[in-house]
Image (cartoon, rainbow, N blue to C red):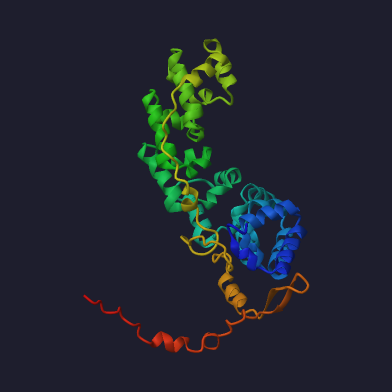
Length: 377
């Protein structure tokens, strides 16, 4: 931690202990607190009572598993319960979702508590209800199954997928989204396009994929490609078996139920091992960071490395930095007792001021530097 975030060494030990004790009071174990601090060290700058315990108390009033939320989404401690968390909860309640359903959604996707209501949540709901023509009951069913839909960015995730499906000739894109909500989180260039091209290459059409939309969520190199190629290897037309039976839960079901006596599991496993590796487009490493809006701050805010100030995306962190820089006491090392003690902040000897430490420093800087000595030829 000190190597990746050296600023933690400037945080007083009393502050670190108080914040960690406040997290433990919320139901976390010591190893959970250590993992959270390694991942989000700026939490050590939060006030243990006014911020950490206040947020934990507000979350405890909701029907959610607070320790689970803290382990999955520790940034929730930097949110305002009244202005952010309750705003999200009330907005979801307006969609006729009860408290138990919202609690289940938060348990599946704790980051939902930090989504911006006006800039993110409402526009996504409007697109799902308006452009995709989902009914309110279908919307509730989809959000219960895939609550991370509300975190997807409209320009970077939802609209490209919708346009791609429409370019394939689909008129009712809402039906595909209703059956497979996770399709909105797939990347067009590296996940959807290669699957559609492969299905077309083996003799299937977009219509076959629309009849069974979950095929778009299965891995191409591990499930779709080997099974369809094995059918061609055995002389079984790929159009003779619906895709919902080709994409069976296990390889055993595919060989013994879908293909009946045509294939056996050992033969299929030998065929898969003999297949050459498939060169797939590389998924961008940070595609989720660009496709999801940041929780704190305005869209496009950059993540700053924790030094002494913490994460500038947290509301009030800049003011907290300025206050920390004006602090008049700090922990100092007492050589006599061999302990860290709280004492007045003093400058090192000889560094109290530039004029005192170096009386003629300012005047010397104003003197012109001597030029090079003339060379004698």
